[in-house]
Amino acid sequence: MSKTSYQQNAPILSDCEPAVRIGLVGCGRLAEAGYVPAFRQAAGVTLVGVADINQARCFDIAQQVPAYDGIQPMVLAGSVDALVIATPTRCHLADARHAAQKHLPTLLEKPPGVNFSEAQALLNLTPQPWIAFNRRFDPEIVHMKKGLPSEGNLCLRLELHYRRKSWNPFDMSDDALLDLGPHLIDLAQWLTNSSIRSVKGLLLEQGRAEFELELERGNAVIACSSNSPYREVAQVKLGNGQEVASFKRGGIVAGIIGKLRPTQENPLVNSLIGQLEAFGQAVRRKTGITSLGTVRDGLVVMSVIEAVRRSTKQGGVRCSVLESEKVD
Image 1 (cartoon, one colour):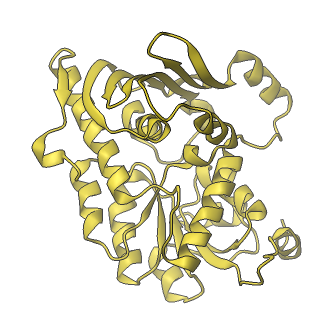
Image 2 (tube, rainbow, N blue to C red):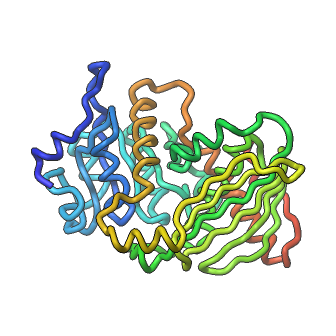
């Protein structure tokens, strides 16, 4: 990709406002298959720099975009208005702290930290980062949410599976619960507009996790794995068992088609486009209602993950969120 072609694909703002200049920290698979393609199509934002300790990765995924060997030299260059942090989970807190010290708005990839304590430390940052729960911006899931009843109990089944070996990440040690669980836990609350009361662990392995959530408006069964073919499922039923909405993507047939058409765009790009556009609007306007995830949303997710671990360790007993983990 040449510099000229990248600029030709950059969005033109109808309101004549300058595009928000964003730096991308972390050039792994998510950046390559998701963020960089999304930047080419998102309105109101432009990619002005990439950073990674592996400089070859920077040049591989974003040729002609200025490259840096870390977040500090990128920030010191002074060319960014905001940052997207897509580094390994163990680096999230340190990178978010550095961005806050420079007063830069930040979109921090999930999970917000390796545990609840790290996520809680994000509350002390000014400005606090946004948390990248990109499924909130998936067009099909947004459409499904709009069709759900605003009252009454709902029963959800949420699944997210992929084969990590086929994704071939450069630096990933998170188990399936920490890797994929945050998306589904956040969706359970976001789709139903209700909080989580308790958790029951059903299965917890390095590559698989299954658990139940008791919601203010019903319940959710969640399953995720990092050793299975790609598949996403969201099914919503009323208390009487009547299905009111469903969403499915992936599966064996889709996998075969994907192998036959390897250049096909990754389905996560559309959700990242919407998320980047919302982030750009939040940076420009500073305030206002947005679907972006907050630090407190991230804290809820991490408190549930730790409750799942406790429940499973105790043989699947139902666990409430500990007092020290409750998020007001």
